[in-house]
Image 1 (cartoon, helix red, strand yellow):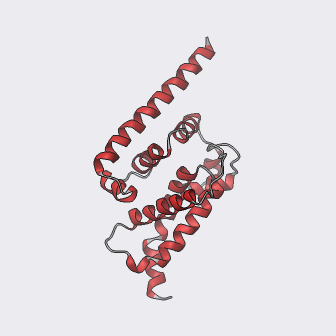
Image 2: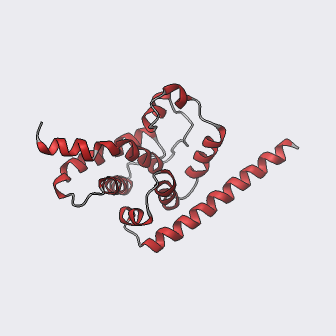
Amino acid sequence: MDARRMRFEAQVLPHLDSAYRFARWLTRSPADADDLVQESVLRAWRGLEGLRGTDVRAWLFAIVRNCHATLHRQGRRHASVPLPGEHETEEDLAMASTDPDPEALAVMSDDERQFDRLLAGLSEEHREVLALRELEEMSYREIADITRIPIGTVMSRLARAREALRERWLKESEGELRGVR
């Protein structure tokens, strides 16, 4: 095995599941996320020699984001995209999770489904920063580097995204309470 392949497998491939989850939030479609990650991994392989520094995860996420933007500009996204939880097979869930137990993947709680649905309803710029911060646990600096926006913009988008998510959750919860009466 050559040194480049060993470096790629050691540095890039451990972040593949996280990249897929991020792609899933960007595209809201398992099939589109698969295509996006495949294209991103190919670009990462071709650009591996240009990688400087040690933050491979942020570098890979930036590639995923840039590939998504390119595909979006080219009009390759579907006009109608199913929300998470709809039309998913156990295989789709297994690919998006780091939990190796397929039975545990098949049973998602109502709260998780509600969160997924509410997050999917946010604008792309809000969903993107919220997913990177809360789901992928990236720092503000890493998010700013990935999205190529100032750190202050990251912080304000996060605040607006959290508020929008909170408002959606409260509105939905209020509707459920009315239905019980």
